[in-house]
Amino acid sequence: MNTHLASSSYLVGDSITEVDLKNFAWVTRHDYAYTVIFKSPGGRIAQYPNIASYVKRLVEKYPKLLDTVDMPDACGSYYRQLFMLNFGRIVPYIPSVREWVAGL
Image 1 (cartoon, rainbow, N blue to C red):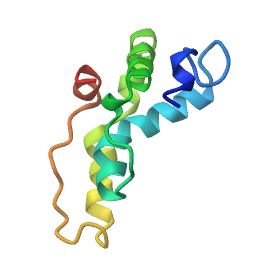
Image 2: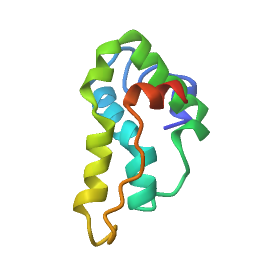
Image 3: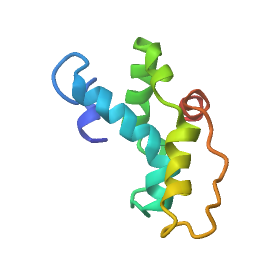
């Protein structure tokens, strides 16, 4: 995905599609849920400059996207509900989506 976004503004075609919207939901959960709970390899999104730029472009062009993700709830639910992967049910600090995008 990082390689593809080096030469394309969107994942499919020349304008935003459902794929971009669904990907936005996945990308916002990646750093605080998938890499920690599921031990997903690859590191944080900020390590992928084209994906980070893509997220920033989407948010800049479509600021209402920020209202579609409640990161503390979306990511925190993984920590609270997947007790077999988080026996202590310890939930770390999870920033808002605005804070996360600002840190990219």
